[in-house]
Image (cartoon, rainbow, N blue to C red; front, side, top):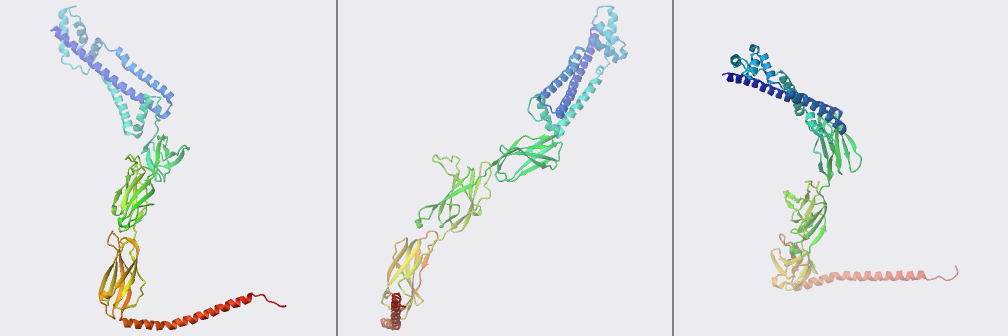
Amino acid sequence: MNTMSARTIHRKLAQVARLRWLIWFSQTIATLLASGAVIGACHFALDWSWRPDPGPRAILLAGLLVAVGYVLLREIWLPRKQLPTPNDVALEIERFFPLLHGRFISSYQLSKSLGTGSPQLIAQLIAETANVIGTLSFRAVPDRKVRNRRTGAAAIFLFAWVAFVGLTPTGRMSFPVWVTRLLNPFSNVAYPTKTMVRVERGDQIVARGEDVELRARADGLIPASGSIWLQRGEKRWIEQPVVGSGREFVFVQKAVVESFAYYWRLGDGRSGEYRVNVIIPPQVRGIQACYDYPAYTRRASETTYGGNLEGLPGTHVSLAILTNKPIIQGALLLDRGREIPLAPELTNHGQDARATTYTAAVDITTSRSSYRIRLVDEYGFENKDPMEYAILPSADEVPRVELRNIEDRKFVTPYVTLPVEIHCRDDYGITRVQLHLNIAGAKEETVAVPVRANEREMTLSHKLRLEAMDLKPGSEVFLWASALDNRAIGEPQQGVSNKVHLEVVTPEELVRLMRERMESLFPRVEQIGVDALQSKTAVEYLIHDGEASDRPTTGTP
C-alpha cells in the first residue's frame, strides 16, 4: 500500500515535470521564431534602405549571425543548464495547491527514504497525501503565461512576414532577391528597389520594317513616367522618355531596320537588358520562267526572266524562284484561292541543302489570271505585300488567205479552165486549204486544194475547171478560198480570202466584150502617145536652152 501511494506521488511529479518541459520547448520555439522574424525584418529593412555593396553586406550578415547566436544562448543553452529539479517541481505544486500544507514535498522526500524514522508515521503521511492528490488535476500547475505571450508575438511577426511577402507586390518581388543576398552576400543580384520592373516579352524577334512594341509593368511604388534606354550596335545608350498609364508603360519603335538592346528604368527600378533581333523577311529576288509550248506549235522551249507570264493556251511554264534566304513554306497563290506549293530545288545529292531556289509549274489557260508568291521563313515571317504577276494567254492568229492574179468582175466562159493562185500564211501551220464557189447565190461547191501539212506559209496554184460545174451563160459565180490552221487547243481556226466575182458568158459575147474594151482603150492610148510626144519636146527644149546659157560670150561690152 505504501509502495503504491509513493508511486502515485512520483507519477504526479513526473507529469508536472513533463508538462513544464513541453511548455519550455514550445516557448523556446516561439521565441526563436519571433526573434528570427524581428532580426530578419531588421536585416531586410537595412538591406532595402541602405542597399550595401557585397563587403558591407557581409558585415551585416555577421551581425545577423551574432544576434541569432545571442538568442540561442539566452533561450536554449542557458535555460537548459537551469532546468528545475524534482524538489523545485514539488515546491511549485505546493504553491499551486495550498491545501497540501507542505505534505506533498514531505511525502516525496520521505518516499525516497522509506525505512528511516517511524515507518508507520511516514506510511500514514504518504497514504494521506496520495489520497488528496488523487482527486487533483496537475495539468494547470506549470505557468503558461510567458509561453502564450511569446507564441502570440511569434504569430504576429510571422503573419506580418507572410502578408508582406504574399500580398504586396514589393514583397513578392523583393523577398527572393533578399533571400539570395542574405544567403550569399557576394552575389550580383539586383538590389531590392521601391519600384519593381517586370518586362513583358523581353527578348523579341521581329521582321525588318515592322513596328515593335515594348511593354513593362511597374510594381511597388508606381512612378508617373519612366524611360527606356536603347543601344544599336556598339553605339552609346540613348534614353527615350515614356509616360505611364497606371502600372503599364509602352514604347513603340516604328519600322525597325536593325537589331538593338534595351532596358527599362521606372522610378528607382531597373530591368535587365534584353535584345530585339531584326530579321530580314523572305523576299523574291528573281524569277526564271521556262516555257514548254504545245506540240502543234513545233516551238522549242524558251527561258525568260520575270514574273509576268504570257503564252499560248496549253503552254506549260516551269518557274524557278530565287529567294534571299531559305524558307520553310511557300506557294503560288492563284485566282479563286488555288495554291501551288513551292518545292526546293534539289542538289545533285538529292538534298535541298538549305536551298534558296524553289520551283513550281503553271499551265496557261484561255482566260486571263494572275498569281502571287507567298514565302514563310523559319521564324514564321512572310514576305510583305507580295507583287501580283499576270498570266496572259496570247492569241493564235487566224490564217491569212489571199487570191492572187485574178481580177474581180472577171468574164469567163463555161468551158474555161481558170488558173487560181492561193497565198496562205499562219503563225504555226496550215492543215487544209479549200476553194469555195457560190453559184447564183444558191448552189455552193467546195474544191479541196492539196497542201503540205503544217507549213506556215505557202503559195498554191490550182486549175479550176468550170466545165465540170455545168455553168450556164449569164450565171454569177463568187469565188473565195479558206484555210484551216493546226491549233490543237480548242477548235482549229479558219481564215477566208477575198471574194472574186465571175460572170459566165458565151464565147461570142466574150469576143464582143473584149473588142469593146479594146476600142475603149484606143482613145486613151492615143492620148497617152500625144502626152508622151509633148513631154519629149519640152525636155529637149530645156536641154538646148541650158547648153546655150553655158556658152562664153565674145566681143566688147
